[in-house]
Image (spheres, rainbow, N blue to C red):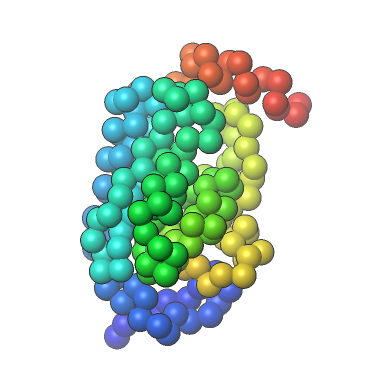
Length: 194
């Protein structure tokens, strides 16, 4: 029996979008998002990345974090992917697409996904699951994607978590220490409310 897919507003998806989805395919694509995080780290950036899958589950784009190498705090993997996707594809097409973000998108990226018109977000794990927003003691907006998207007027779907991938997601942080990064040293301390 096919799983009933609900949007963030509790509405059933009846237009056939995401009929191809299986847990196995989601896990496969989330692993590609995890690998994108390793690529970001290898290029000298934060260990975050994501991928975009098309209307049949085909891999379309990869989004790498470039915050540190481009000195751009907005250059999260999702933001980079959304910019590229909006230039390459029309909104109707993107409404049938899924973005795979292993650790769940931040508030800024959730809004970018909303405005880019990507119809589905898939995550493996999330800091929001534990209400542990300040794990790296950096500035944050503690709003989950669900909290943000429920304030909007689009029937976006969120699927996840996939707890079996949590350990794989965390491996990216074994060689990442933000405390020694000049970018954070210059911006974090005076932005934080103590």
